Every structure is written in C-alpha cells, then in structure tokens.
Length: 267
Image (cartoon, one colour):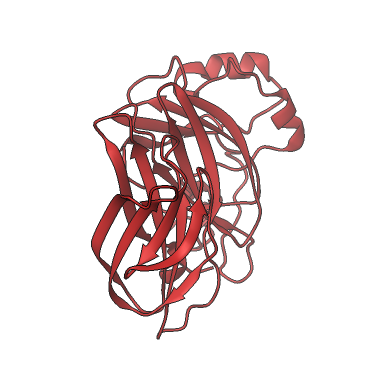
C-alpha cells in the first residue's frame, strides 16, 4: 500500500460513507444540490467555499481500532412502494438498487452531520426522501427507510453495543409498518410486549438460544397479524424483529428477524 494510505492502516479515503458536514456547511446546503453525479457543477457554483461533498479528498484520517472515534451505519429498505432505491449521503451514492426488505452492509462513519437522499433506483430527479442525521461515536446504527405511498421517512435506530453473554440471546421489536394496528408480541405463545405502535423501538428482551415461535397479534382483537413459526436465535447474539409492509396492499404485513452488528463488528 502506498504512503498516502499510511502503510497499511485503513483511512477515511477507503470508507464508503463520506466525511461529515460541518454545521456551517449543513446550514448552507441547498435543496437544489441533489446528487454528486448529477449536480457537481451546481454544488460548486452554489457553495464555492465548500470542498467537502462527497469527501475531503486531501484529508486522510487513519482508522485505528481502540483509538479513532467512529461508528457503524447500515441502511434498511422498509419502503414497499417502489421496487428498489438508491441512497446518497452528502451527495455520494452509497447504495444502488437496494430492494425492499434488504439491508446494506454496516459502513464505518465518523461523528457528525450527514445529508441523506433516497431516490427510486435509477433516478436522480425527484427524491423520495431528503433528510439530515447526526451521528455520534462508538455507536451502531440502522437507518430504515419507511412509509407507504409517497410518504417516505427515515428512522435512525440505535443497535445494541452491550456485551452479550454466550448463554443468552437479545431480542427486540421495531414496528415500521405505517398501516398496521397497535400490536402485541408473543414468543412461544407468551406475551412479551404489549401495545407496540408505529415507529416504536422496544427494549431488549433476554431469551434462550434455539428455535422459537413468534406471533404478532392485534392488540384489540387478539387476531394473529403475522407469524414466524421457527425463529432460530444464536447464543451471544442480538436480534431485531422488524415489522414491515403495507396491510392495504398485496405486500401485506411481514416480519424480518435480523442479527445485529454487535455480534460480528469490532471497534
């Protein structure tokens, strides 16, 4: 590896996510500056004093475990209204053709402000979503694209960073279906959480590793909304049960049980 890459140490130049915006750059960023691919000249014209989109090319920050302050961020497409999306961070495309129900890998990020834009895959003209997030160090995040119809939103969810005992599994529930009723969660036919509403992120439950039956029931009627009869949980792992979909569409209501990054990521 050449000298600019600091003799084998990973640097900011190799990261998928660009460097964060400063507060001044955040305040000056205009809606017209959409993506780096389509608007590079426009960005330079609107913001001649800023050279940080999508990255500060002449700044290399070494990423040294245990020393450099960074976090992890992944994106989750829980928006059923289009087949797939492209995601831009500070003008840089970081995910292409991310299909409904799919996740990106976890990407390293530095603390700071980020502008998130989501487009239907293959387009750059009319965003489904434009928003800003602020990240802090030593965190693991999942950014979920949610909503139905033309109403897309972004939910920034903190994943677990707690040490995990090998004899136990952690499990929580995140309700991301805008059309679903308030619901209760049952694990092996025992009520474990009640009155879970849209955008709610539950606490973590500690359970035993192995196979479990999972049901989500309507809080009012008690009827089963969706069931996963064979959920396999590993010891020493954290999982999130994501409730997604549109009950008013053929997609229907779905659940995904997904392992979180604390199981395999390192700081």
